[in-house]
Amino acid sequence: QVQLVESGGGLVQAGESLRLSCASSERAGSSGAMGWFRQSPGQEREFVAAIRWNNNRPYYSDSVKGRFTISSGNARTTVYLQMNSLKPEDTAAYYCAAGRGTILSMMSDPRGYNYWGQGTQVTVSS
Image: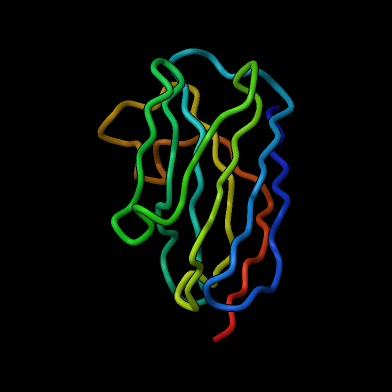
């Protein structure tokens, strides 16, 4: 069973930065993907960013494009999310996700992923 552990969340003021980390207990296959979703109370889980392992190509939601950067570590076991210029609307629980064989059309869909971390809270105050 793949286990994902997120870290790096916290409380920051608007305009500041945070870097989230996700560590996987197992190495993903080349057809897989890892990414980040976020969810606020009463809202659906929202896609943030992801990397597809076959080409390391990043994908971003429009709401974070230009502010957030996703990157990968070695061996397809780690992924990072550098969050700059944070806004109060970025406040959410952030979840790391891993997919065994995520097709391109499902990169931004939670149904394209098989494993989920417990989440790390990001709170941005104004």
